[in-house]
Structures are given as C-alpha cells and as structure tokens.
Length: 284
Ligand code: AMP
Ligand code: FE
Ligand code: FE
Ligand code: ZN
Image 1 (tube, rainbow, N blue to C red):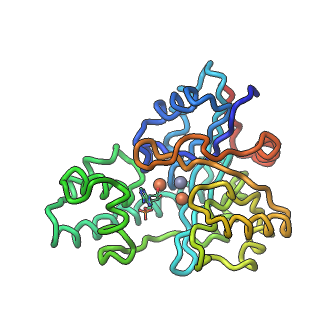
Image 2: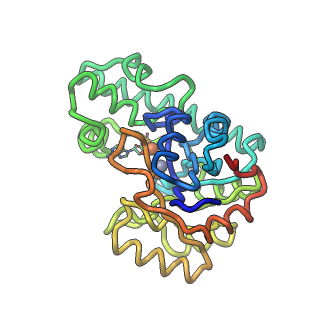
C-alpha cells in the first residue's frame, strides 16, 4: 500500500455526510490518503459506489459502518469493518434501526413544527433517497429555513438532547452489536468513547465484556474525545489488549472535521484487515 494517512471513520450522503460516496473517495484521493473507510450510520449502501470510484486511484477502501447502539440513556457508536453486508442479522437489525430513526425524526419534526416553520418535506429535501435519517438532516432544514446559522448551532439549541424536542431511537446494546458484527465476520471498534469529561457512558467492566466478545479496538484519536478521556482509553487498551485507532469522522461540509486530522497506523490497519473475513478491502 502506498504511503499516506489512513482514515477509518467517514460519512457520505448515504447517512449524514454531505458528499456522495464518489465525492468522498475523490476528497480522500485529493487529501493523499492511502486508505479510507466509508462508515455511514447503520448502512452499507455506499460501499459499491465507493469501490467503483476508487478504481485505479491507488486508494484502498475499507468497507465499514457506524452501528448505533444504546447503553442506558447513552447513544454508543460501534464502528464495524469488513463484515458480510448480506448477513441476515445485520440486514434485519440495520433495517430496524433505520426505520426507528425515520419515525423518530418524524416525531421530532412534528414537535418542532409546533414552534417553528418547518415541515417533514423540508427535512426529506435535505436527505438523499434511502439515506439513514438523523438530526443532521433536520438541522440542514432548520438552516435553510433561517432558524439557525449552521448545523452546529442547531445541535447546540433546538436539536440538543435537552432542547425539548429530542427523543431516542431503537438500537441494540453495545454487546449485542459487537456480537452481531463478529458473527458477520466483521471487526468492531468503539467510536469516540470518551467525549464527555465528567460523564463516561460505559464503565471499564462493560468495555472488558465487549473485549471478551471480540471488540478489536478503541477509537482514541478523535476530536471529540477529551484529553483526560484519551489517557483513560489508552490505559484500557493496554489492560484489555485492544488496538488503538484514530480517525476524522469526516462529514463533508456537515462538520468542521477534516480528512486525516486523526489517523490510524499501517500496523493496526494490517491487523484489522487480517481479522476481517466478511468482505475484502477494495484495493483501487
Ligand atoms: P442522531 O443520530 O440523529 O441522534 O444525530 C447524531 C449525529 O449528528 C451524529 O452522527 C453526528 O454526526 C451529528 N452531530 C452531532 N453533533 C453535531 C454538531 N455539533 N454539528 C454537526 N453534526 C453533529
Ligand atoms: Fe454522523
Ligand atoms: Fe459517531
Ligand atoms: Zn461518525
């Protein structure tokens, strides 16, 4: 594989990124990446387009997904790589999550519409067909209507979980998620597990349980992890024999995160590729 940073966490318009998988791959090539994982929320619908776009570019595409899970009140994201996208449980469970997200978004919009000029059609206009719907699409509609200046402002006000309109959506537990991904030949990594300084979603013992169930690594390099949290994660990685990754969580123009602002070592990627048996990486 050529030199160049490895970015294992990015989104396209198949979920809440602003670029098509083709545009995402082009951005990765332009940024000089050697490997890119496409990890849309609860969907594998962008894989084929990303592979096609990477042909003869020298870029390796790692097919992935960011699986939504719930741990008590916390939304915990599990990055999943190289699993079989046709695995029955994966197909059924991700369909269930996407359906739950859709109806939850409708209910959130219904409540916002009581206070602001906003319709469900306004939100649908911000999402590409069949994409995994989320608050970012509602945010984009609020921006277009002039209620807030940008996505981030929407998340800090109307869409905040304490903003008065929030509700959760169905998702499996992190343990169920990890077991499902491992069962589909995939490689699970806990996404941005230390974003809050005072409040840690998961106790050490739960992460140990996930490690025992086949968790491969922890995403330590992520702009939303606190410095204190990163130290905690590095200790846990050592204690439980987990690998350490770093990634951008790029969403195109939807977030300030830039490709390769955090990256993963070639050694860790090699181990990840060795572990995954559900789908091969695409070497462009
Ligand atoms: P949801 O899954 O619908 O609850 O929405 C959460 C998603 O919104 C995450 O996947 C993030 O990508 C995105 N998000 C969270 N906070 C922000 C923010 N401040 N600005 C832009 N996007 C955000
Ligand atoms: Fe997102
Ligand atoms: Fe996430
Ligand atoms: Zn993400």
